[in-house]
Image (cartoon, rainbow, N blue to C red; front, side, top):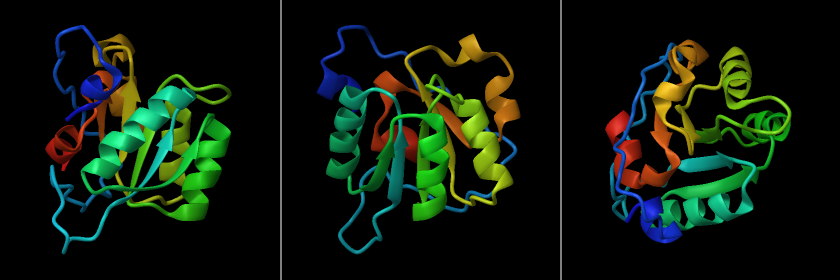
Length: 154
């Protein structure tokens, strides 16, 4: 089940939009459903909506992801990822303080080697070339966030 099922979104799926950025550090392959023998990807959620974070946590943990930390703004997000060194960072584009593009730039500059997936309630095309230029591993619309959409980025 994806996030749209948890949130009860009434709009039709808009599909997974992906952009391969310059980060190039991802060697992680995230399966759509994890078996009990595979390590659980340690994940950090960075989003200013507590409702979204709770729903995303529910979806990801049901698929076997280990959500190790959350942050509600960009500055805190950089600090949390740096402190916890997760396997995956999910970063909202529109955050208080520094935006998701700047969070991504700082994480890449700091040597974070896991995939950074930008998320937004807006369509990827709304951001033009910023997604590619950010260094992110990909982009997933919030309504389409699921283990399957993350696996498609691997």
